[in-house]
Amino acid sequence: SPRSRCGPPGPGCAPGASLDPGASCTLTCSAGFTLSGQQPSCSADSVFSAGSIRCTDTNECSTNNGGCEGQCANTPGSFSCSCGVGFSLNADGAACDDVDECAAVPCMNGAACADSTTPGSSIAAGVFQCTCVAGFEGSTCQNDKDECTSTPCENAGFCTDDFSVVGIDAY
Image (cartoon, rainbow, N blue to C red; front, side, top):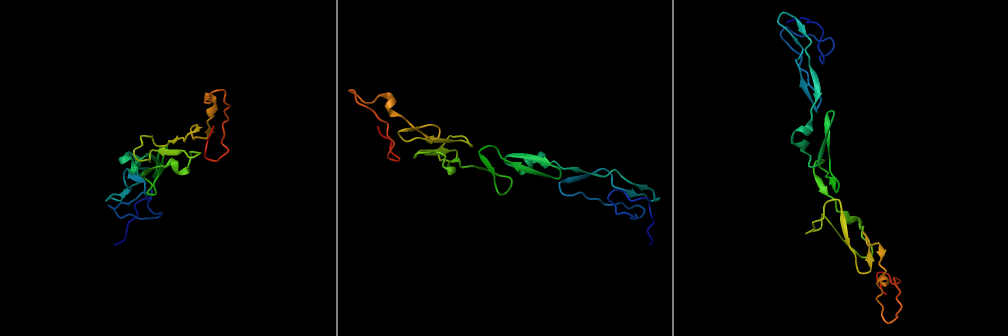
């Protein structure tokens, strides 16, 4: 049967489209957007209604934090996950992995390194702690400790701090 033209097509209907009386256009939105409003339609007596259809951004972060273990940031049509200090975003794009700060070997001069990934450690994520060997001090054990400042030599002895043998600090 012939189709009767029912006014201009509504938003999203193909240009020049005809609607049969009683029909309507079916519009869809791209992923990340939600369809809202009234669809365009054509009444049984051929009166066209353009409708008030529109696509609005879906805030994926408002449901279950977007599936993110860390922070969720909504963007138009999408979202992204990020992690706090001491964590990196997993390959799945949602989980956060604890970073091993000791992997970069920040401690010097034979010092032991511990961080939140060290078994039994109570160190917070994002920081590390060095335990210096004798003769060294500083946050990364970078400084040679001058043992002579405490005047360890008695009976008018002369003290010399010596680090000429690599890895051994003697006086």
